[in-house]
Structures are given as C-alpha cells and as structure tokens.
Length: 313
Image (cartoon, rainbow, N blue to C red; front, side, top):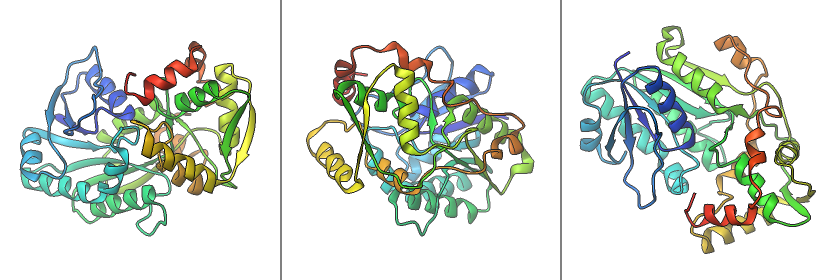
C-alpha cells in the first residue's frame, strides 16, 4: 500500500485510524496543522509526523514526498473546528493540487452524511464543496459519507454526559424535529476506511456508512445518560435558544463544549439506510446502546467539564 498520509490525524477519528494503520504495519505520516492548541497524537504505535498548513501548497508538497495515498479527514472535535469547517473546501482543493503535482493518485475522503454544496448549513455545505473538488479532480478517489462517530475519546457522547452530570435535575435538549441519527462506533468507521484504501472497486464511488440503529436526538441523549448512570429529566428547548447559548459560550469560554456545528447536525440529521455498512463492507456495526460502557467511569462531572473547557483533557 505504501506510505499513507492522514490529514487531521490529531482528531478523534484520525487518532483511531493512525493506531489501526500503524498497528497493522503500514507506514503512516500524520499531517499536523500549525495550532496554538495542544494536539493529541496516538501513543504506542510508530508513525512519522510533519507540520503543514492546508493553505500552504509548498509545505503540502514537501509533506507528500514518498506518499502513495491520502486519507483526508476533518477533525470536527478540534478546538479550531469552526475556522477549519469554513475553509474546508478551499483546503481540500489545495490538497488535491499538491497531490497531483507530486504524483499521488489515491485519495479516500471521509465526508458526512448529508453533504451538499447547496446546503443551507455550513457543515454540510463545506463537506459538499470538498466532495465536488474531489469528484472533479481526476484522482482515484473514494468518498465515505459517514454518520457521526462515537467512542471513548469522542467529543460527542462524552460531552453530552459531562453536561448532564454538571447540570442538576434537568438536561436541556434542543428540539431536532424529525431528524434522525445513526451513530457509528469509531473502530467500525476506521475498518471501513482501511478496507476502502485497498478496494479498487470503490474507486470514484460515494459510499454511505452508519450504525445499525436510527435515533432521534432526544433518544440518543437518553441512551447516553442511561449508560453514564445519570438520572435527569430531559427538558426540550427551542433551537433559537440553544443557538443563543452556544453563541454566548463561543464568546466567553476558551473552548465551547457545544460547538456551533452541532446546530447544523440537529437541523439536518445524520442517517442513511440501516444496511448500508453491511452491504458495502460485509459486517454489522456495533450497537450504540451496547457500546457506551466507557461513560460509566466518571463521577466528578463538573471538574471534568471544566478541564475540557479550559484545555486540560
């Protein structure tokens, strides 16, 4: 397979992917974006790392030397996620041009279910722009449209549990209407990515993947709270109020535990056919409700939430 370059390797999915690829004996190079924040890297596996901005074509070309394929990720759990989402389409175009110039042909892009250049929502529009750039690139590309992923290091189920544990009596839940979600265990998503790198039959294809169950957002929150052993009454709130709270958090907190892209996700959902993953990759993903035992290990919810907000994870 040759050397594999992983973008946003310090994100939740990126770390899991690097651990899997390096653990399987592949040569892996992590592309680290310059950042003022501490970047978490995988441990206990061997890989190389290079620092380069996706807006710096010469640095990208240097980072791609001796690389045969690229896995392109957008770490939405990164502290800089809003800026990265806003520039994701342009960043992807820069990555493509650099890949062409150094002779890399194979790119696997992990997108989001619901990606659409014409979307009214920033998250899905940015993903759609990146997809369009890849489809027009002439490279041997595969786009994996993935549901929201979860696991022990995520910034989704863990944050929901931290918020519920820190807020007494009730858990505010923004109304997501009829939107459906299909959370996918991170190692199942990583398995799909790794298999895709070797699957030439998936070249120039858009492949949807997700977990084995559909949930409303309120149902997902209820499952998370039960797994974490937290008893709270779910308090529905209107999306404009949730948007106001997130905006205030952006203004006053070093790191907002409820990022603005959550609102896009709530509005559009993140789901596909329940058999999509099995049909494309031949295995059944793990059940959401039966995979959250990692949430039961915390007791000091307020302390842990403060550690997250102030960058002490």
